[in-house]
Image (cartoon, rainbow, N blue to C red; front, top):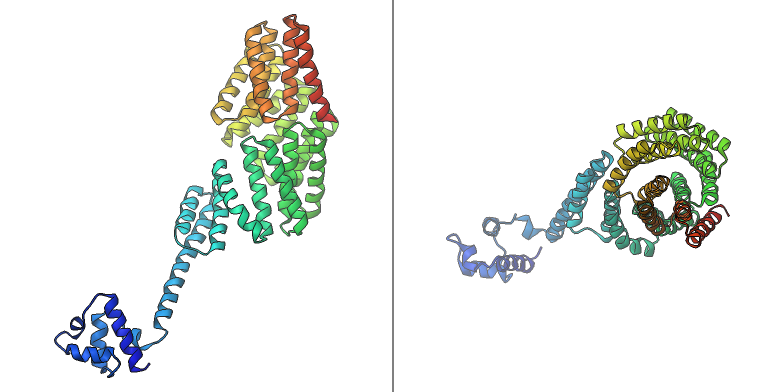
Length: 438
């Protein structure tokens, strides 16, 4: 390094620290000596340079190495990114350990530091996954809506497919079924368009579409997608989705009144789930067996399976599953005309679903309660409950369940000797059934 460059560096650093030449000279050197050094007129002795460096709180190499500043900035940048990477990996470990609140805190901590654009959007993607795990679906959608355009614009196709899939799941959990379906179908189209390699993701998407169609009462479409999921999952040897698809086929065949096939598929599912020790799936499959035996009017067998399912869901602390089984046991006692026991189970289920905000099941319970109070000739209460059921189920777009509520209102108005009103509701019920099975 020449004298002029050395002098310039000393002068710039002195001015940056708001020091005067006298502050550098101290008692050892004169201000004139420092001035000559800064002007590049003379080269400082090693002793003088060391003295000046100490006054400026810098290592001597800072003034001698032309690339020192760039190297130091690079070191700082690398240290910063190392710290960010460590926090990100710790967040991932927290997520994998199901410590989701800690993962969220760490992801936010990483985002608070300046990161490059891609990293910021990617971390937000993982942040959305963490919020999904704690069931904050509104927050998930808020984050995904923010990051979606970036991944679409830059052709990160696999992440884009996962974004549509996660949106579908979140919207479904918020009971916005039509919007959920649209995102699932976009995810499936994206997977097939971009030839993605994450084979299990396609099984998840197919199964979710089938489940949603089943929930919406479109059982023919549901059956088609369960079959697609079963065939594809068998091809890639995704055993858990083979079990889930069999279980789904059991449910839709039950709804289509193909009881022999329903029992065949559900029992296959139970065999696989027991082998894999999938307790929540087994609980669900027992619940479906209860459905089939209820329709076959084998109420003792049906109740036995609902109680087994309820017990497993209780052990798993799954309130939704518990409520579903309580509803079905209540329905069995309603069909047996033991209305007091039916009310006990139905009201217990209603209390749970109100607590967890499960509107779909709430709608079904109000339908059964309305029919029950019709049997007891409590017409005013029956009408109130059936209309409440219609309000909920219509909003959710659940055609099959809505058809049952309309049928209940038709029966009510027959009892009230109002044939015109009864005819209106019976026609609406039949129209919905036709749409389901067409």
